[in-house]
Image (cartoon, rainbow, N blue to C red; front, side, top):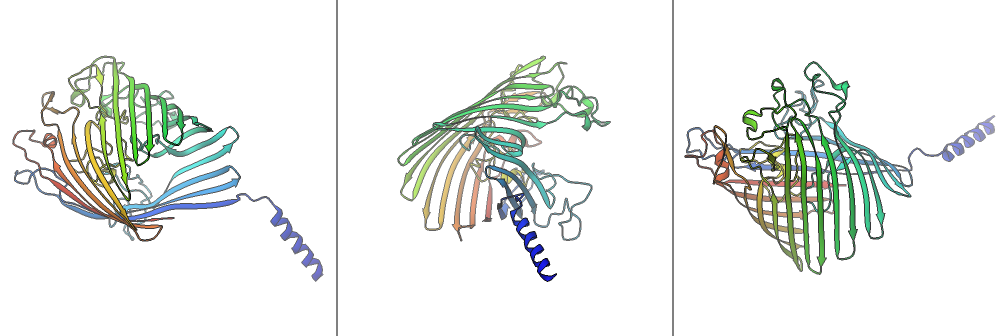
Length: 482
């Protein structure tokens, strides 16, 4: 009997090891950071004015990000990603009282915009299939989206999509379909049942082509987007929606170029949007946009980026120019600026570039709502910057000096009127990074903004008799990657 049990156990073990595995391999990667920031003043206005006062702020923030790849078979994977404890230390806006980490069961909102509640303990953001077929690579599901060419214009995020990429000897071609909003009747309720329907989707179709050799890389992205989630909604004043009511349709063209010749590297990218806002009921925009008139309003926007870097041994120097068209409020027939937005950004600098520590930096706008913030990503601006860096052993030193002004500068008072104060200001940034190990990095930095007169227009007293303060930021960040 004992020998029989030994034989049966052996057969069972052989059968178990011979069964096909549900996953050949599991791969983990991710990062964890802790950062501390000090802002000298969130209210940019000079405290000599009776209604203004300095508003310094200091805090720590953190985030854990984990990506998991389940390799089902060679060339076929399921990839997931989640973020955990993305929050400011000690902030329990979203949490219970026990350790400030227990989520309230009745409320949840991700930290995706300034002033929002912070995200729950664990939030899964991505889950998609990656299939390396004989006719190209496929992504299907909630996957990384909105990155192309240079870093300019990129705002990498998670999006529901189907994407196909076919590598070629000379580069690659590809296509993508993505959906930002689904106007399904399932989401109807008493408050919005009048304007939700099958036709109120926000989706797009994208095609790309890229050529690359040893010296240059160039490509073109063409996207058609139909944004109808405000269709038949903006006309309802009770809903409180005044910006971009109606259906938006149009084309986005994005060519780019990257060249490397010895120690010199140049990058350039252009974004061009041409479309129409269908305003069927000739809706009165009120104070939000009284300049817009007519049933169909043209939309034409531009953005451009040029960056050149010259390497000198372990050091480098460079210069950068960014342009993003602003809204001309004197033109009642056209939307021309990315600063006029409501769930739609046409052509702008994107979030990923982070060209400065203060102006248009997502690390500022995600966690704070300062008076001097213009939101993440360069909009309505002409931006000029020189920079340089030096790498020595495990240290990386970097410094930059930038100037920015508005492409269009308007104020509101009995209608919009153009003003001369279009200066965002000058900004000096310095950072030092130290690689403690291959996976552990520590950075300290400081930014100083000589605040321009453009920000006077944000005060309740208008432009006359308003003074603005210079502001500075001190920051440090410890990052672990794995």
